[in-house]
Image 1: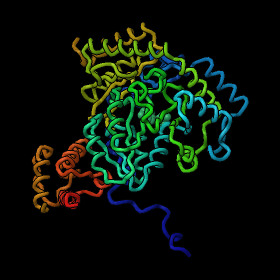
Image 2 (image 1 turned 45 degrees about the horizontal axis):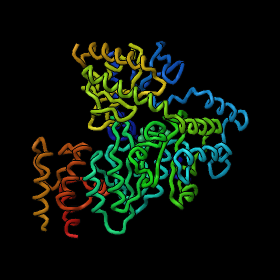
Image 3 (image 1 turned 180 degrees about the vertical axis):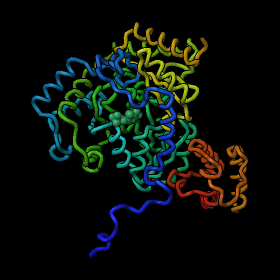
Image 4 (image 1 turned 30 degrees about the horizontal axis):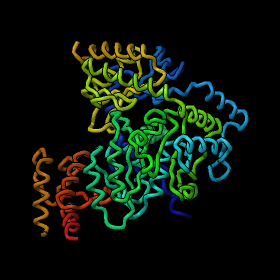
Length: 418
Length: 80
Ligand SMILES: Cc1ncc(COP(=O)(O)O)c(C=O)c1O
């Protein structure tokens, strides 16, 4: 008889009264309770009861302008996109129930990858189930033991997790600091493989990376370059290919990572590349192989949306107008912003602290405006931010309405002078 | 460079980051005693890297808990 059978069912209590594996979350639980004790609406538990359009929803019974989604190009209610999804549901069913490398590659997955190759004018495209998995998979697979990853300290969680999943040496540098990056690359031992990871738009402050200079430095040191263009696809660059296109360095980027969960308006992730051996990734990349592929309706909506984004220059122009107006208007009202100039579709408003940030967030929600409340550790330099992300479907009048809401809420909470 | 010389140079770099003026000995820890947060660690490590022209990856940083560990690591790298 094994010893285990005679053991009591209950595990022994760990040292300390009432302590278990969840005890490490106690400070966070206390912080949340403190925040909610003031009768606040929970900023991290909002439910949209009804979604009326890319820019409006009913939240807690109120008609609300959405200024905190990543629906930059407003594709979620596009007629052609929805029709493509419905047709795929009818013709291919609700899901694939399998991995891309087994029974999970349908016609639609191929068409979606074709659309991406055309959109980026690149040789290879690989669709993942999310952008998170695209970063996780590509980074951990290409940078292995003995290789070096040099990356911006403000990189997205999915990039950090990709580094953690692989065995490479990880070397961060100060945000957007070209010289710091250059120095670190120069000190890497001779012969080691090098991967530089950058983002086009950094989503917390909405600032862009100086990709022209940074990609040139990476190439000088013989490094491969991966750029995450999650927040620029469809909007920045002449064809909406991202900051790397606008900076004129897309041909020097070895891998572009992107997502369908923002401008494309559905869910999924991808990597595009011109590397001649890229297709081998489909066999060796675990977050691609060991998970189910996207449902047919999702890849159909994504492919349709991506093809429409190729011709989105009018929408891109209007989104720039919105971003400039909101940025200029908030600045004139006296708010402190994440960037001196409008650089993307994200305008981050810096709050003095979490408490007043949460109060401002709630005041805006009561005005009928939804923005994102971002707090450490997701934010750089421990800032509390109200992040506004604009949509090409926001009308010029809506932007004016938003500015009025910010003015009233900001004065009521005491963030700006009234 | 001797271990003592390395120690002295890192001590000079640590000074502005040691806001509370914590007394530093071999067993002083960065997270616990010096209360360095992740941003401070990045700036501190960058300054050491520049001073000794070395690279301390995050994987290597994870092995370093105390002041003594850091001096050992840097002394070893700087002599290579
Ligand atoms: C920079 C960046 N990369 C990757 C992702 C992950 O995308 P997805 O939502 O498709 O997992 C996000 C979105 O959260 C992001 O902001």
